[in-house]
Structure formats: C-alpha cells, structure tokens
Image (cartoon, rainbow, N blue to C red):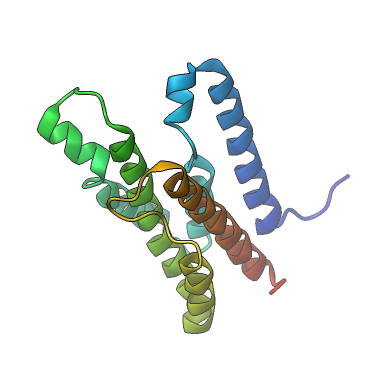
Length: 167
C-alpha cells in the first residue's frame, strides 16, 4: 500500500491503540476496579509527546507532565495517608488534575504549531468541556471527565491535522 504517514494517522493510531488496551484492561479487572477507571489518558499523553517531537520538545513535555502530576490528588493522598485506599472522589480528582496538566501542554503545543490564533482555538475547544472541579462527584462529574478527555483527543487530532497542513 505505501504512502506517506501523516501526523493525523499517527495520532489516530496512538489513540486507537490506547483505547483498545484500556478496553482489554477493563475486561480483566473486577467491577469495583473497573468503576474506578472511567477514563484512560495514556493515548492522549502519548499523542502529546509524539506531537512535541515535531518541535524538539519531548524532554520538556515529559518533564512538565511529571511536574504537573507531582501534586495531583492521588499523589498527595499517598504522601499523607500512605497505602490507605483512595476514595472515589480522590480518584476522580486525580484524573481531573491530570486532565488540567495535559490541557496546558496541548495549548502550549498549539502555540508552537500555529501561534496565538491556533492556541486560542484549541483552548476554546478544551474550555467547552472542562474537567470536574473540586467537590464535584457522582455520575455528572464522571461524564464531565469523559467529555474533557474526549475534547483533549479532538484537540491533539486537530494539532496533528494542523501539522499536516489540513487546517
């Protein structure tokens, strides 16, 4: 078949592969654990790193992600309570914290790719579906989290398309 592989193709493959791995994982774990894993950011994080490679920023993005996650809800819980089980609210807050870290990086890459106009466009799309806030819980918060993750997937695809010259 041949042909040129595009950033869009690569990002789609990353997101698709990660989603498939998440589905397999969910089938293999208990219902209780499955309920605590409503989303998976692996594909989004990998796509961010892949796109960062276009600008020579992979190490910088990895460092920013690591620093951003140093103070998420689950990490702080572990520092205070050790191996005490996480509450559903803490798990949700940790996922939301991660989403906020990734959103900042996506906007930064958009600025690298297309300057302020693209960054504003990407930011706007992400802000339409923010992760749940502190104190949010229950099904509505889980749905907000899923919507935020979906918005991030759309944003990394839009960035890939921009890099390919589609936008």
